[in-house]
Structure formats: C-alpha cells, structure tokens
Length: 240
Image (tube, rainbow, N blue to C red; front, side, top):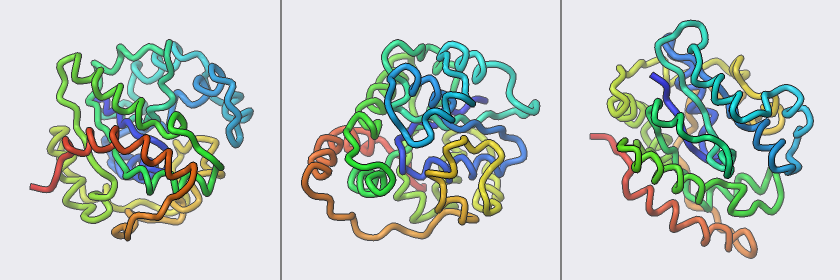
C-alpha cells in the first residue's frame, strides 16, 4: 500500500512520518517534490540551492520514483507530501494508486509556527487552498479521502493513530507512538533548518493549548485559510 499524506508545513507532518517510519513494515519518504517545486517556481527557501542539488527536480522523474518499487521490499510506503509543492503542471494522476490522507492543523497554529522560521508567509506558502483542491481531486476519482487533525492526534495519540490505521485497513502497531531522538534516515536535507524540535522528541508532543493570537497581515492569512480548513475539518475521523 502507498499512503500519500497531504499536509502543509508546521503541521505535525514530520512526527507523522516518524510514526509510520517506526513500523517495521513501512518505508517512508520526505517531501519528494520539494526540489522540483523550488526549481519550477524559482522561490527562495532556506537551503534552497542544497535541496535542488541533492533532489530530483524533474517532477515526472519524482513520480516514477514514488510509484516504482517500494524501498527495501516493504509492503507499505508512507509518502509525506506538502500540498503546495503540487503546482500547476505537475502530474497528479498517480494519486489514484495511493490511499490519500489529509492532515489538518488550525491555520492560527500553522501561521504562528511558520512565521518563526520564515517571515511573512502567504496563503500559497501554507497549502490550505491546494489541500482542498487535491482533496476534491481524490473525491472525483472515486476515493473516500481520510482526514485527520493534528490537534486530535496530540490530544490522544494512541486513539487517533489506531483510528487512522483502521481507516487505512492496516493493523495498529504500538511502536508507532515512539521513535528515537535525533531524526530519521529519510529526513530531507532541510531537516537541520526545520526539524529541531521534532529531532529532540521521542513521541508525539502533549496536548496543544489555546489558539495563538495572530494579528495584522498574518491574521489576514489566517482568515483566508479558515474556509479551507473548516471544510475539511468537517470530514475528519475521530476515535470511536
């Protein structure tokens, strides 16, 4: 099984990759379209030159990689994808061959976290609109997408990861709740800039507190993102 996990930045996405990477039956890959996205858009990101030098920058070649043989002959392949990396012109037809999961986080939390690492993010940087678009594409091909909220995972890691496994029709594995500090061998080269907190972790962080207060231009980004978040949040799974 190929699991395509669609999220935006600062969204528990790396912890979720570590969660699935802790399974003995699952290979993982970290944002395989990042290099192609930077090459095609010309955007300046931290470590952008190093990312493009190390990664495949032809989007069709990336598709061939992620749809080829699963690494190490494992039965499952967890793919961490950033929704905003899937720009116009990149082939998305391959998603029909995957189980598609959409990982949400409240826009206020995303914007507040992202702004610490990269100033003045726009809506396009955060992937909310693109996430909704990819969701609709998955629906259009006849799949029932799975939606899960990072807030719920942090409130109840075992219950929500078990619910996700059941939705994917794979057995829950207790080792998914713990991993070794220091990162994962499949971390992207950008990990040194973005993954400091999760590299110190050995499991999911505790419950999140009150929503951060986001004002000014950043507050307007939150307002723009809310309709996309609310539409998908209405479909999220829960502990049953």
